Image 1: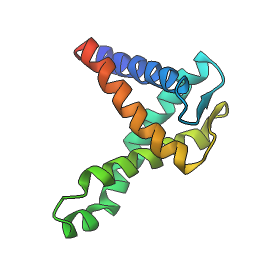
Image 2: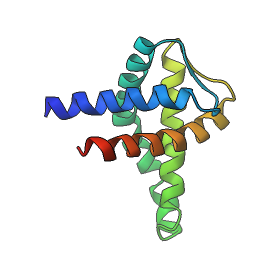
Image 3: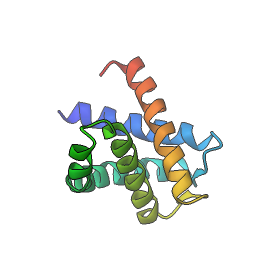
Image 4: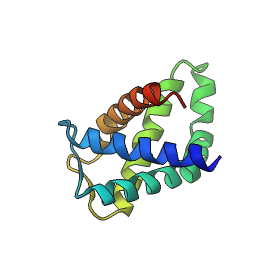
Length: 119
C-alpha cells in the first residue's frame, strides 16, 4: 500500500515536471516544489473531487452520462487550479486556460508513465 502511494507520488511529480516543459502555461520553480505540488494535488484531489462529483451528479444524470468525461476533465482542472493556488512556486500563467490544458496534458503524461511503470 505504501509502495503504491510512493510510486503514485513519484509519477505525479514526474508528470508535473514534464508538463512544465510543454507550452501549456504551467510553471514550477524547482524539483522540490514539483514534489510538494504533486502531494498537494493528490490531497486536493482526494478531498475536493468527491465534492465536485456530487455537484456534477445532476448534470451528469440529465445528460445520461454523455458528458461525464467533460465533467471529469473540468473537475481535474479545478483541482489543478486549487492546488496551484495553495503552493507558492506552482503557477498557472493563463489562469483557467492553463488549468484546462494542463489537466489534459497531466492526464496524458501520467497515463503514459503509468503504462511504463505498469502499476
